[in-house]
Image (cartoon, rainbow, N blue to C red; front, side, top):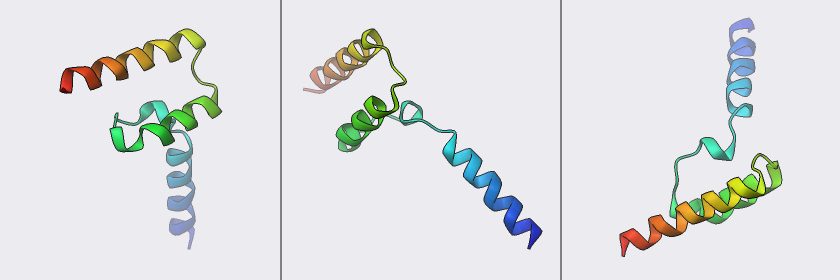
Length: 63
């Protein structure tokens, strides 16, 4: 029982310490990730603009 509880606590801590910024870019999850990043308030306005520019450039190079 103690092992299960310890495993659950460690797993919860690892999962709760991740942010949307830690995720790998995926076009399918872009809208959801953008909402999470905005809600979390982890980025300044300048950083948000830089990230948006990077995403636009990444999309344009694929074409």
